[in-house]
Length: 334
Image (cartoon, rainbow, N blue to C red; front, side):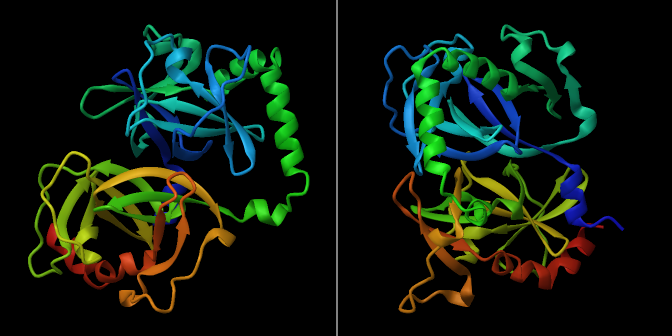
């Protein structure tokens, strides 16, 4: 029998994002974080594609414009602009994109090689395309090629020396156990509050469909079920589950598809804002004076990108209701 965890190992997860209304994606594997664009210090004689240098938890992070790399018109940053922090051979670079759309799973048969790409953007910077069910395509960016190209340029300037020497000095005394202690957190909003769940518990993030099929005699928090590529997916309203007022559907809402004990479920959240990396030492316990219902919050962090408190939700709590009603919900769909 194939378990949900085995399925996750076999799937191809991608982060999709837009640049100039074009849809691109990158494999989830090299994406360390998705952050708001940090303040960057401009460097004299730096390549045109380099916006500047920023500080990411003690490491110097070059901030690079994908618009400039693709020779597109400049665009002012707004609330949707994000930087993808990509890791390559132990180095990190931040690539600015117009907005991050979602995280999704692509079937292998829908991925085509670079040879089939005919686009104004150089095919050398793309590794393939994904044919979506609606007939559109998503271009897979080859960040290895882009980083190799950018580092060749950076090596010819003082920028590379600054980045390399500073990061090496910073990491000299870093304990290996401290590095392996890092974890990635998906940050999402419910109202004005920020919450988070571990990336390893999130299989993908998808848009909320126009209609969900209601299931009778289930908890009021269960919104219904959807068909996600042939799999029946129960959907829970995270607002309702955590005691927030339920709001009218809107375009920013997303379904986080999570897996727990071989059960796959979707959770509707107001929006997914970023993916951050934290160490366990940054996670603080919930104060004893705080009333937290059913131990749904395991701790909190101070998000260094926004300086806001992000409450970490227990994956066990998220699945508490659905575990009890899962068989009934699945049976109702058959």
